[in-house]
Amino acid sequence: MLLLLAQLAHAGPAFAGLEYKPLSRADLDWVDDGRTSGLAVGEYDGIVAPGLAAYFGGWLSHRTALSGSLGIARLANSTLVDEIWHQRHWGVIRPGIDLRVAIGSRPERTPWPYVLGGLYGNIPSARDVSNGFTKPEQKAADEAAGQERLRLAGVGVRTGFGVDYPLTERQTVLLGGLYTVDIRRSIFVADDTSAVTSWMATSAMLLVTVQWPGQPSDDAAEDSAEDPTDELVAE
Image (tube, rainbow, N blue to C red):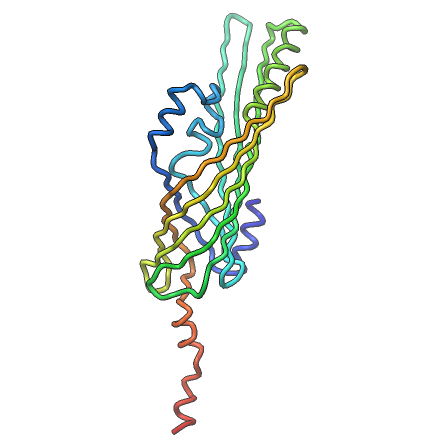
């Protein structure tokens, strides 16, 4: 995904920014109700998908842009007693990709709206090994780690509406906002149990974007495209 975005960035100006989602009362209630994964690295544990996240991307055309994000969280625990060692770890890699399509022309120092659609996935890892385990104990630990990976895995989509406001003349710095509907699904499968969990919620966030090189507004681009010799010919 990183290589794809790097290649696409050459098609037009590249950009990077920060996405800030304020902590809400609902986030605190989620923790109080014990709805976190219990492994610290799940989607709603606040680490792999934090309130302040970075994104990066590039413009594919004058009004279409592709951006991506990457979240990483890993918790490991190792113990050594005499010659017996025990290692456990849990981790999630969370790649995400969004497509932006701007609405209308790019104005000069006025808000510029766009629609957004995105996809992300939680790639899990979990392991529990020890040289003190018997073969049945190691097998049971492997099965438990497999169930933990299923608890951490998931895929999600989001769609919404945003707006950017250029703070500089060539739109190198933009301040914006984004409102999305997020849908996530995870599937838990065991020998005798299968469970599908779906979650849908709306969210609003603030964006700060820096793009390079800057892009002139459509009006400025049209003015610069005019041939300065036209007036001389007319005279």
